Image 1 (cartoon, one colour):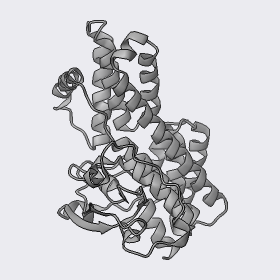
Image 2 (tube, one colour; image 1 turned 45 degrees about the vertical axis):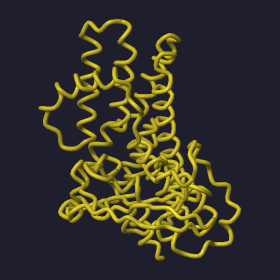
Image 3 (cartoon, rainbow, N blue to C red; image 1 turned 60 degrees about the horizontal axis):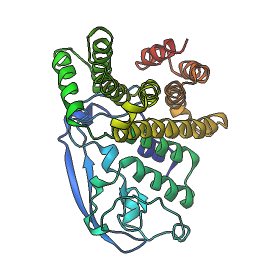
Image 4 (cartoon, rainbow, N blue to C red; image 1 turned 180 degrees about the vertical axis):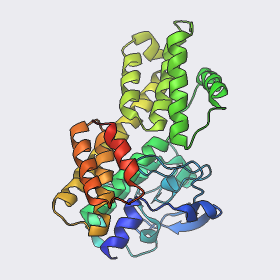
Length: 332
């Protein structure tokens, strides 16, 4: 497959267009036979995602229905091989046979495990192992790490009834706020939660749980750094942590996963950009992607550098320049 096709298909940056929003979302269900172990399972593939939830500033698509990020990579429930659908339909490359794929940890018989049971970020971790062993190019591996970070952001933690009640209070106040995207919507919910924590007389016993919900809105908006800080503060109080340990640990894990994937994506992407291996038509876009990855992992100096490099590569009349300029302001 040619380099430019791989960049567009796997990294997926700027690939969502008005066309995707105008098509009806379609989910294709497939009977799959794993080429590694011969196990048969069912998997789905999303065609024409609705894109009605907008896009985050790192170009993650937000669908109101099935999100392709979570379904467009499959993982065998028995041997744990992860890959894009076409590789499940082809002969297994010899170098894949001894790859130590990561176990799902699900306490079910393989026949009882559906693709929805398996965290999407784990599917990407195993897909990364698959494609590294297969020997695909560095830029494509960077794209897989970026999509793994999206999968972690889209993942959810299991709310307790008390958390559900708190969430309803926040949603009720925020539902009439106009928003342009789900990213903005979650940002607004986090602001409402923070305001209520600050000015409302919340019972001390309920405050930790309010902060956990607040952190979850932050994480879902893409601000895993701030979410991690809030969660660690709650964790430092032994009584509060013990009472809410499972949800706090799960939330912290997702924050760490997203940051880890973004850092790996940044390292590989900038390696390719520095070596001048990227096709010229994609330089500006991928420099922006590097800047946004750096910003989201807290590296303001690197973010500033790559945003400025992106602007230098974009023509002055390009309609995406205002987005780059806005993100650059955030790290000045």
